Each structure stands twice: as structure tokens, then as C-alpha cells.
Amino acid sequence: PKRHIRARIFLPHLVASMEEVEQTYIMIKPDGVQRGLVGEIISRFERKGFKLTGLKLFQCPKELAEEHYKDLQSKTFFPKLIDYITSGPVVCMGWEGVGVVASARKLIGATNPLNAEPGTIRGDLAVQTGRNVVHGSDSPDNGKREIVWSSAFELLLDMNETYIRIFT
Ligand code: ADP
Image (cartoon, rainbow, N blue to C red; front, side, top):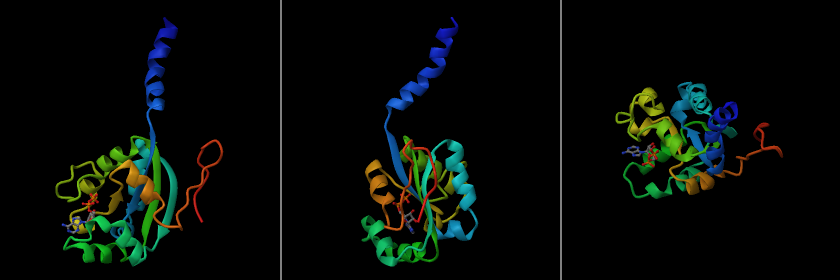
């Protein structure tokens, strides 16, 4: 009977390990950095159980901001968005885990912080869409694309895939 109990306890881990480990790109925007929310935001992803695989404080050049948000080029707020993202340093991060892309979007909350649920980062820490403190990739493909957002951003993992440290 003991063995039976153990099998039931470990089964969820076996199932989880068969699911795909994803990577996502999370960026703390200039308002998050300026307001001293870096630790708070990183802490939420750590407490959830995801693995930090890269981190860098980075002043985003205008061209890179335009490339990152190129899908929004036609929007009237686009110039303001570029000014905002380039207004001060951002914290670029890679996070890894099963289902991390969708889960990170849930932790972040709705684009407009007034619609974001309490308990989410934007729901708890922001008020304006144009100052919504954090970015998270919206698909696994974008996660992979955005994680190489700049040549300054590298992920360093040791051979056992345990976390050593990050960055140049
Ligand atoms: P999300 O960041 O939630 O994926 P979008 O991809 O739609 O949202 O937009 C990217 C970013 O552009 C938002 O996080 C926000 O900073 C900015 N943005 C979106 N809509 C507006 C708006 N109406 N006014 C100002 N900024 C906006």
C-alpha cells in the first residue's frame, strides 16, 4: 500500500515532465525600474516556480524598441510607446518552465491595468496602459524571438542545465 501512495504522489511530476518546457521574455519597463519594483516583480516569477535564465539592466536603443513593437507601428500611441520604452533602463529577463508563456501573461494581467485583476502585477502595481510596468511574450514563438532581443542579452546555463549565472 505504501508503494501505491508514493506512485500517486509522484505521478503529477511525471506528467509535468512530459509537457514542453518553454521560454519567455519578460521585460520590466522603465517605470517599473524607476519606481523600484524590480525585486517585487522578479519575486513573483520566482515564487511561482519558474527559472530565471537571463537578466540584464539595459538602455534600449530606439531602433530596437521599434523592432520589438513593430506589430503596433500603425497605432496612434506608437511614438509615445517608443518614447516610454526608451525613457530609461529596462530589465530584460529570460524565464523558463512548463507553460511559462501563458502563465507569465496571467501573472502580468491585462494590458490596461484598470482591467487587470487584483493579484496580478499590473492589477496590483499600475494604473495606466501607457505605464504598465512589465512586458511578457504573447506566444512561445515570440518568446524565442524576443529572448534574443539584443545581442547584449545572453543565456548561460551549465551542462546540467542548473542555473549558474547570467550575463555579459
Ligand atoms: P501587452 O503588453 O499586454 O501584450 P499589447 O501588445 O497590445 O499589450 O501592447 C504593447 C504595449 O503597448 C502595452 O503593454 C502598452 O505599454 C502599450 N499600449 C498598448 N495599448 C496602448 C494604448 N491604448 N495607449 C498607450 N499605450 C498602449
